[in-house]
Length: 173
Length: 202
Image (cartoon, each protein chain N blue to C red):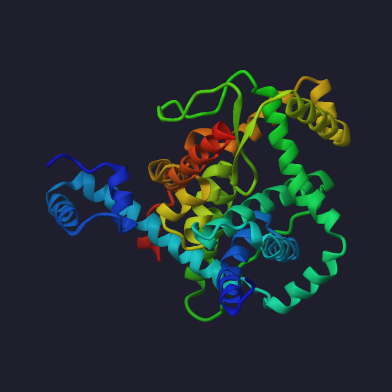
């Protein structure tokens, strides 16, 4: 069963799973460790995978379960979480650069503070590039439910920017 | 045309609307200042989010992945299969068992599926990998599940504290949420029916 096709399925999904793990665990070492574990776990349990379902759906379910248990374990160990930093190239308008940096940091904080289910859907949508239909399949929810959570997440982002009078950033840039 | 709802604007920016609806929205925006303002706000948010995510992804240094590494580890751990079993399969099984004990009274067949017999002697279980199984509840099974639940509580310090301080309910809710009984897919229901028929004929 472990053919070249299987290898390519793993390779195809590795980056997306890693990005998801990194955003959820906020630490490179942990993300690498968790992603490796997820791949290993999927690899060892390939025999139990029912091939009528899509491989990536199955893999994402394993990934989410594993990332959550990894993060719980880490909370128990009270391990420090490193903040991811953004590096901006020095070229271009420095004022614009500083302003964009501010906006990105603000957005990063808002995403970090989203309720877990909304954050999960936001990350699957943006960092794993999944459709609402696919996310619904992975989470075993209705497409409407997934879209509602996503809507509330986006609304929260919008309201936070509005509250701080930051919504006119397009004009300021 | 009525003013456009936020939800529909979100669909617009996620490219979830058909061409006709998009044209209707564009026409409405031409004549409605309020909606135009709302549209502009959403547009700014979606464009910022897109830029932020692109930048974030660009900055991520993703380590190389190769299958051969996986295979080597797999071969090494093959000898210690009891460890991986304990870690990945027994735990979910015990979590499932915990719910079974707590929920013996209310059964899990979705009410809308009338064709499934609502028989108190059967339980529908789903593990962490969303595999669905049907189990017949008899005295042997109940004894096993009780033992599994006690072992789970006994082996986990935090869980034991939670039980003693009456916070077990939270743990139970998390498991219930994970199991998502009411959202079984059609393929799962077909499998259930098959399993039930097998059990009935045996």
